[in-house]
Image 1 (tube, rainbow, N blue to C red):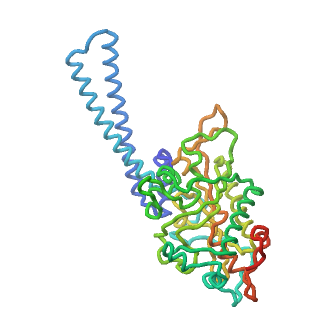
Image 2: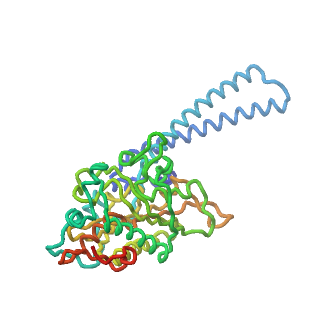
Image 3: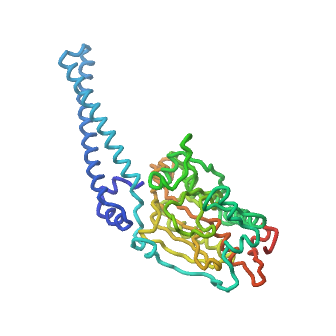
Length: 419
């Protein structure tokens, strides 16, 4: 959530930035108008309470009962105050509704554009294999009996799948290896969070109310299945004050992710590039506002290091204003080359959200016990996303003899060198 005070004081800056990401800035005019009304109602209510209190105080000091005129006047004031409070509650609800639906203000360094066509490719590392004998995963997976698309569809429907045998073991090995690198080398603390969260937790991350139609929900309990571990990790300190001298807090979690994918209908239909349920290793940080740019760079480096060790060619892309996520101020995607599918697959999206999420969650930080609270910055990023990394390994690891070579770093986890 943005700071309404900053929006009102810097309306032109917010209008330009939000307009660049396609937001209807006429809502800002409505917001300013509502805030003016809110202030007027608050002032009117304060005046009426002050008048009522003065009359009551005078009566108390004179140790007498109120006159009939005073009683009627106090009753009238009380009735007017009730109406003021009711009107104020309606206005506050309207302001809250608008504020919860305003996306984050893009960083000044984000390229301006309507969609992904305005994204900027920063660099490419590694060689993209393109030998004719390399098959896409939807062919080589069933041939090797490590991927069963038909079983997934029979069990759950479209966009579900089943890993089998060495395919399932490779999947598990990838997650275990990535978690070990993040915790043992990169300094993240491992978290095993809930996969079902409360509505306020989903609101705090920025997924509600914006993406309600793309989320799975249990109607009976009003709990929501997480679309990414970012939601749970962002809720770790909601409503709390992080203790002094404890930032940065670097967390990593391995969880399933659940998405309806309504917004991607017709895209990536073949194979398992875009599915309803998948695992992802998620990096998440709470940092001091002065340090968030530095931590964004380190998270990008963490994710690319994993790609490099998995012997995959990777590409770094900066997203434009029309492509960054709702809660993001600046985002970089990392894609890896899939030689069988003949395309780049996004395996990590790393974002700095500034204080957008911590404001929604009311997560605060004190630099010292005596200092006032501030909102920390939050950053998130995949490190890395499955099953796309699985796809890239299966496709890029194919050899001319038909075998699939396993990256060297995974062999101690898989227990085999090839499939």
